[in-house]
Length: 153
Image (cartoon, rainbow, N blue to C red; front, top):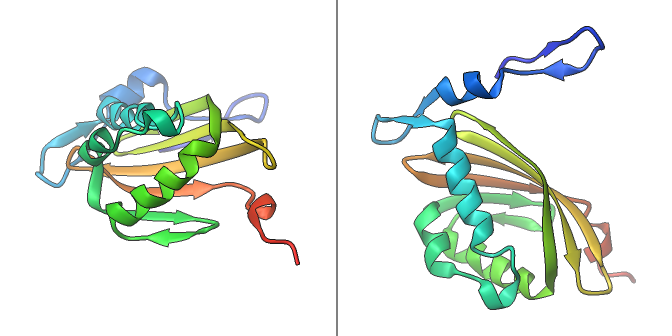
């Protein structure tokens, strides 16, 4: 995505119309629209954002590639099964997820959101960067301040 500074110095990218007109090839050689990528990401969040009782592993497996590449401050995974285990352990502590921003271009998307968690952490701001190919999310990079999760000596 090309960014340029506007007259006030802020960086701006293509309009949403330009985004929706862009294509990224999927693994089948067919074009993937930005809206397809964003739909995958929305389905991903809809599958777990209501907390542990509403964790929908079946739906997650439909949108996540079996060889999902996951990176976070707490570790990395290269298989969807290991990632789902991590996510399943996290969701019972989630009280609420508030999406602040979700945007994408071609086969990539980025989400910025706040998690309201059970004590002792309480609040956590997260950013996730997604890559999608072949109608599945293939890569997910989770970014957050992991300091509250570190064991204190």
